[in-house]
Image (cartoon, rainbow, N blue to C red):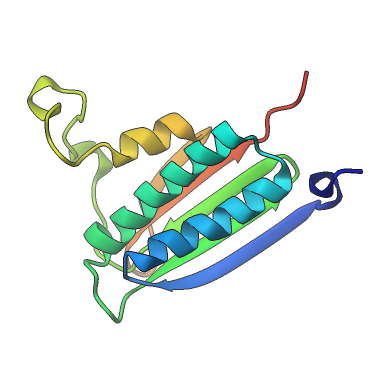
Length: 147
C-alpha cells in the first residue's frame, strides 16, 4: 500500500512570524503534506505558488511585517482533500474593492495577481474576516483520481 493511502487524516498547525522567511517555511510544510498525499509535480507546483502568494499577502499586506503580529497556518488532509488556511492579524479588506488584475489599465502593474493565481490553482478559495482581527484565506485542492 502506498504511503499516501495509509494516512487518513492529518492536521499541522504553525504560528509563523511576519517575515518573508515564513513564506518559505509555510510552503515547505504544505508541500511536505501534499507530497505524502500523492499530488503530482504539476499540482505541487500550483499549490506551492498559491501558498506563497497567500503568505506574502498575509505578511506584507495583512500584518505589514509587524513583529508582534503572527501568521496562522493550518494544513489538513482529510481523505483526498488538502485544506490550507492562512490567517493574519492585520486589518480586514473587502475583496470586491480590489482592482481587476485583468483590466487593461492593470495589466502592466507589478502586483495584484496573487488572488487571481490562488483562485486559478486551487479547487476552492474563500476569503473571510478572521476573529478577532485580520483576514483568513481558505484554499482546498483535491487529489485527482487516477483513471
